[in-house]
Length: 234
Ligand code: C5P
Image (cartoon, rainbow, N blue to C red; front, top):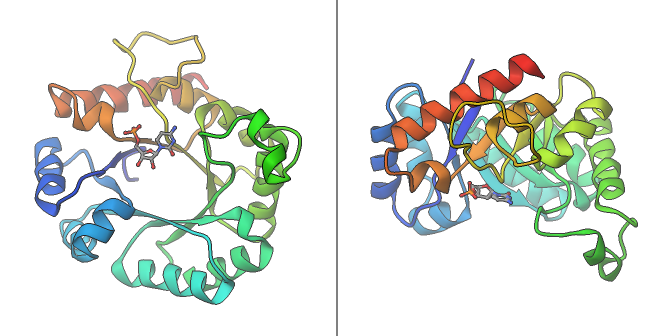
């Protein structure tokens, strides 16, 4: 099993990204690469990580016509990525195309993005969307499940109701995580690894809280142990 803590490599250069990977050591075996690093450096960084035995979550955030989304997913599969993201708001034809395009790559999970975490209920009317973020998230998660996606990306606050709603085998991948000061059980709604895991997250994505820590290796180890405690108490 790969680590449930996915480290986001939100950097401008491959050199900076690989420096963090090296400093984290072998326990940190799952990395997220987003559009910044991909656009700046191209896909070689993905190949390098895969060649080093790391899992790569390629956060392409695809929102396109089905044919183009299928092409993007297949490209992620060819690179050896383990996860790729598609916007569920593209609709069922797009999600179905993404799932079909991933079929030749058995290690590639298609994750559906529901509502971006920067939106709140009051932002939805101008987009012509359902009355609450929760309703919109559930509507799109339902679409993701029905079209055969492997999982969804959701905030820790959404993970709890999504875990109850989605089939058990579907993954919930949770960004927007902060590290608690200690491994103590955190009962508040702060989105710590402990909170996310106890709410039912399968993986957490952590960027700055690890990359910018004084001791990134220790921050990763803390995140992992907090997640494991949360998963066992969930
Ligand atoms: O905030 P942090 O540096 O941990 O972000 C890591 C990744 O998580 C970012 O690359 C971003 O894609 C994602 N993120 C998110 N929603 C948030 C915060 C971060 O999707 N609220």
